[in-house]
Structures are given as structure tokens and as C-alpha cells.
Image 1 (cartoon, rainbow, N blue to C red):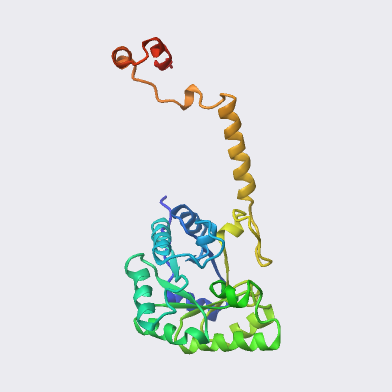
Image 2 (spheres, rainbow, N blue to C red; image 1 turned 30 degrees about the vertical axis):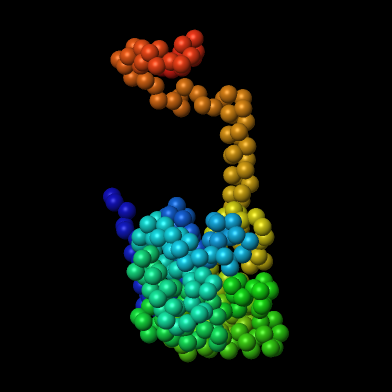
Length: 301
């Protein structure tokens, strides 16, 4: 019996999950294999985050990520997960300059990369950008709380832990909804604040480090699988340690090559038996070092 095809979630279906109290589980992915694994595992959504700049491209933070790099990762993820709702993350300075540039760049995620929605950071500060993109017919995920693109101002720290900061996060949340965004991500805030936002806003509010009361949870795939080693945020649950597994596997490979345990005959493609004489004659005819020809003849099966 053939497997039942995976049906992509719709914006309406995701919104309905909030009303039903059904949690949304989503994850980042930046490559076709990562996205393929995520789809096979049954995630509700994928975010092609600018965090790929750190997890895939090796940048120290997300700031250097360009539109072209982001779109390349988005296209790869879409090829890997054709039946999953995917959100493209707009990088630093792709929407801050003007409403016109914000709309144009947001549109590229839909037209060129096949994204279902875009995400951008900021609340009050980018309310007009969110509205302009929504007015252009594009689904928008707002992102408030700790916003990595603003790390030069905020510092990479949890937000909303005192009264002034909590008010700032709430103001941002209200601004995101007021601008017409369809969903919101809140990062690294106290669970009390996450619960407040989820209960007060009509749009789904998802968290990455925002507590259990939110409408869903997001994690960085490289954190979840133990690939990213620079640091591990407090809100991460690590389900594997691919860094350790990968290093040990590569060590084993290096040792096999050094000891001549790899490759073995079973790893080789031999010359066809009925072509061996012809290939041997070719070797001898073209040899620059005739005395070495015997070493070049492949062994028999």
C-alpha cells in the first residue's frame, strides 16, 4: 500500500490550530536534506532562518547574511520539502531601508523561492514595513523579543524580564498584530510574558524560548541535533549529538585510509573482464613510465 501523501498546512489551518489549542511544532532548515528529514518527521512548518548564516555559512552572527544567500537556502529547503509550509526569513537590511524595498524583497521569497510566507524582526520599529508587505498580499510572521539582527543594540540576552522591557515587548506584539501580520514569533522572553501575549493576541504566537503556554514551538535544527557547537541557548532541547557522532565517524575514516583498510576491493568498480586486455594495452601504449604500468592494472574480482 502506497504511503499517504503529506498534505501541506495552509495559513487558515495553522490559525485554526490556535483556536483548537493544538500546538504547532516547527523547525529551521537550510538545505534540501534537512528539509527532507523535517518533512518526513511530520513538522507543521519550516523556517529557513537567517540563523543559517551561523549554522551553515560559518558567520559569527546573522548580520552578514545576504538576500542571495538567504534565497539560495530557501530554494534548497523548498526542493527538499515540497509539501511543507515554509517561511523565509528576511535578512538584516533587506526591509529596513524603505517600504518599497521591503515589499520588493519580500516578494522575491514568494516568486523565486516558493516560500509560503516571510518573517522579519521588529515590532513598533517596522510596523509600516509589515503593513506594506501584508498589503502586497504576502503572509507575514512578525518576530519580537530577543531579535538577533538587533544584537548590537540589545545584546544577545533574554528580553522582557523587568517592567520596562516587558512593556516594550508587549508594545511590539500589539504593533505586529495591528500592522496586519498573520503570525508572530517571540524569542527568549519569560514564560509569563509568553502566556500573556498568546492570550491577548488573536494571531498565533509561537515561541523559541518563550515558555510552554505559546501556540507552538520553534527550534534551530543545528541546536536540536547537536551540530552547532559555539553555544547552546538555555531554551534548547538537544535530541542528538551529531557533532560528536560526525567527528568520530571522520576519525574512523581517516584511520582506515592511513592503515589502508579503505578502500577495499568491494569499494571499487573494475574494468570489464572482456575489456581488460584492451585497457592493459592502452596503458602500455600511453605510459610515460613503462616500468610502472603493472601497478596501474586493476586487480581481478
